Amino acid sequence: MARETWEAYGFVGNAGDDPAALVGSVASVRGIRFTARTVGAYDALLAVETPTLSMLQDEIATAVARAGARDVRWSIVVDSLRFHPKRRDTDVAAFVRFPADDPVATAEALHDEFASLNDRDGYGFGAAVVTGDGYDVLVDLGAPTPDELVELVFRLRGVNGVGSTETTVCMLRGNAHLEGS
Image (cartoon, rainbow, N blue to C red):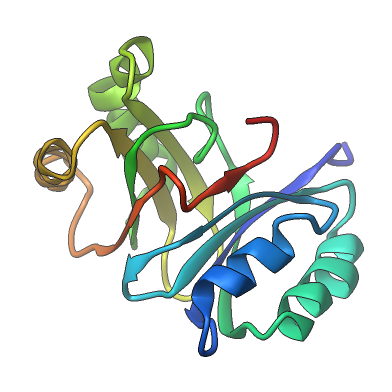
């Protein structure tokens, strides 16, 4: 069965001299549904949804490079389970990637632990099994404050199947571009 859409997340390691300008310039590229400057291992994050893999490769990756992004690490979604990453608008978010021996079981365990966040105002959760860069699972956690977000990240690290993680954090208010908001 053919996919209807391809989802991917681009972690921009070098956004050039002006990460805010890069984020703003790629926000209007067809297929990019979320962009934000980040703090941590990466300068910016992009969330992409396209009808074909070739569109991701040929149009979006090219547009992102032309905008000045260097060292973009793409993670393509293999299975997004019930809640896709970066679908909720929160004030602060953490994007956590990690390897897993059984990525689907680990993502299901994360869903069991965090799905109720989506019922609370100002909070969010999404998880996907992804390819790329030695990571198998991508988790998006959102909270109203940085302190609450840190508590959620520590809670995530206690879930069975989660080992060492790579975490990128961003304040979203006034920084992020989320399609439809």
